[in-house]
Image: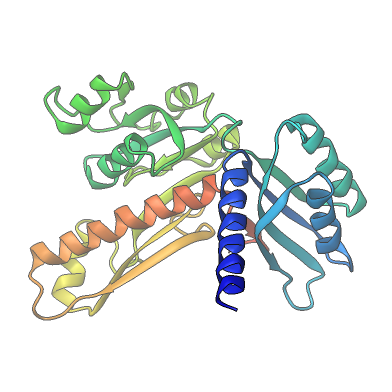
Length: 311
């Protein structure tokens, strides 16, 4: 009996090791799907992957009640020799046509180029510096093409020294009446999306239409109660007990685009203005970083006019 159990345990361990070694040769893929709801979508998606030798690691599905809509996000692994990238595209395209999909996006992080992103910032550095360090240490799976600012940082600033070391251009565009939209547009033409890291200028509706791609913004959750200059001081003086940060897509309305991520933290009478500001800035950094990662990992899908599905 003891020998039997030992053999059984050894066999199980071997199986786990074999699967782990096998998995190390597999490639990670992500697929998101949005289509009218009907019976059999999950089965067809699963069969598409399994029939090519792939294995689903995680699957998220959202079917809003009485909307007739279907959303899914699937993480899977596959052998890219047995299931080449172009063949995979074709297989998912057939599924897309079968179910009249509104959205079918496939991403293979190890094979596909990273998203190209430009970062816009004003004089506050905390979100910009965190994004740069996130790019450097791999937390943010993007390639930063440039940093654009309406604030002229000196050559010895932490930002300018970092960018110089990594050959990332810094463009200072002093704010004028026309907001320099045309110049910014030329600098960001080859990007996949933009990040506003506490950029305190409003992008015009013309710029948004001409750029035509997603823009992710971050701001404090104190809006709309504390608008204008120094909102942290306003909120501190008002004795609020809860602060936060919101990341959202930029639309023509000011700070009211579809929300991607929100974070909150309690404050109390024991906080002074310095700790209040520090907590607020930490939330903004974390919230923006989370939004960028979620976007790059295809976790964010538009839902109705002003909302999102975030898997």
